Image (tube, rainbow, N blue to C red; front, side):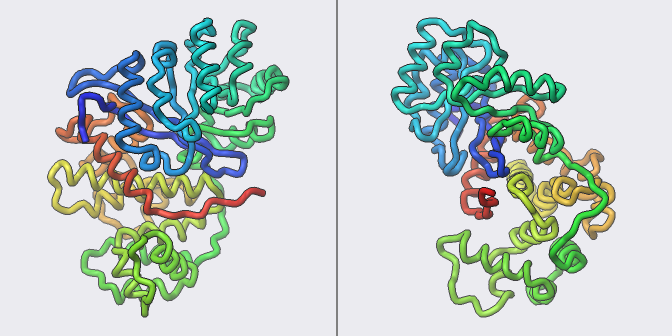
Length: 406
């Protein structure tokens, strides 16, 4: 997949609507050639991004959702991004772009072609009014600001026909504040940061599911043992059977037992479903966090495999369990103490250095676009990128129902 015209760094960050359904993804990218130092921006960067997205396919990167693409002045003027389908792409104008005649003309042309325009990190200034007249979305950086400051920025934009997107939303509390202030869309890592509470009601047989996850870590466990545990929780059994039916085109339709479904899916997938049931995901952010965990699991395993590891099961489980604090609303140290997992997995999850931790650290850095710290063993940035893209393509098979509109 590596090519001189492809970007070296490529990741995505979810954008949610008010019902916490995934609305789209901002594409994080960094361009470069071979093993040279990657660069961002420039005409070549825009060409590399357009080529990469065309080669990979937007469906493989963002599914049916919209892709928000950051562009600077030179990238806007060169027009390469207009090779991508307008109904799938939002052109995100960086805050450094000045509303020159050439820029406004390029944006008018893009609007005429059906593209939507977003203004990134927007700070109101009279000189930016021509951009506001063309924009469909305005992104406001809310990190570190008081509610009164955010409200003043929102009020300043009330006369413009734009959807407001709060970016750098780093906590559920800040999400709720922005929701109250009238934002339509929300972006940040609030769905991947734990918000601890003292208690949470679970509509599932929690001890059984905890035992199941532990059993799935045992190399000697049999399908029969897993089937007996799953049978003790009807919700778990239902999800397994539904997943077999909905997630794979070639899935059998005449399963005669839970054991057949478990054997068909494999232990890793059953373990992932068990984690979702255990968490009792209640909203789109929970589901997004779970999907993040599954992507991390696959990514950690793929990195280990690319680096020559023969057994990647521990890497998969480390990535999967990394989102437990978000889903369970409890500290990681407390959670892993009750899971019968290998000591090296427990150590990796609480931050102690080992190879599992290195793979997880690389995975998290990559998903957040922290290219300089996304390193694992001797793998090149291109190899890491390819592992990530392969996982995203595979993730198209996963099906999780998003919450319906209120």
